[in-house]
Image (cartoon, rainbow, N blue to C red):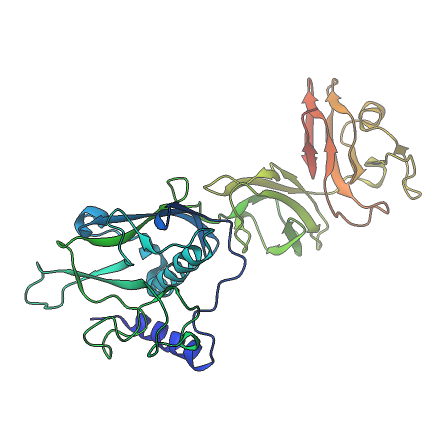
Length: 383
């Protein structure tokens, strides 16, 4: 009836028992809050399990009322790790109850000294699939006694996992496994939902497309790492997924050679949406001629490179069309604007020696009233 993954869980838990570390309290728990009326708990808010927050309500009802028909279990998304993840959830619930400011003796509207966390729906007899039961984890409150001394349990006079004496067949349901529970009979369940009502967004990818690449050796980076070698035109995606809401900054780590080219990035920075990023644009072309470069540094010192400017707008105004302006990775309090019919490239993020890009150049705003501005590693703060 049980799956092989649960067998692994049982062996793992048994190993904890043998080492004297049975159900060691989880570290780095988020601050959760046990909702209680005196010594009876009705729920737990912001319960952290493997970095995800859940809200728990202790209800007394049939399984069909709690989980639906067919049953839907919040830990099913873990696939083969369902039992292991739900075990951690049951441990976290027990620890939250034990850590409550006021002693918790019972849970739910019926004030029971137990609760179930169902994790799967099964048919004990394959010939009668209409008779289905739940399986999962059982927790109970108990006090130490002569035949159950405190050193046997993780904590005396506390909530713990029901072991051996709680079921008729301890050999078949050891280590806190709940006995087969009829879906149509009411019990106290730990009804669990995502805090905030929806699951956290999965980590997403960052990528885009490359055009004009002829040379070899192009390497892109995201957030200063996660090197992505590019061999030709087409789409790309960085290997490392990132959390929605976090920032991304795509830069050129190594420009192509054989032949030498300059690659520029548009739409290369921002906040990652839930669906990921797929519109970073990398455009590669022949580099400008030797006299078609200009340099900008807030200090006015461009490490001997000329022409050198303190302000981006002065460089744009002073230089002819086709110039590539390399700008140090600093915050420039400028509203950059192109007002004449020129085609310019603003290449930001350079170190003070202009030998390597290591970050972004930040400006206030960017406007092209005439001509064309291509930007690379330029971010705007909107000021």
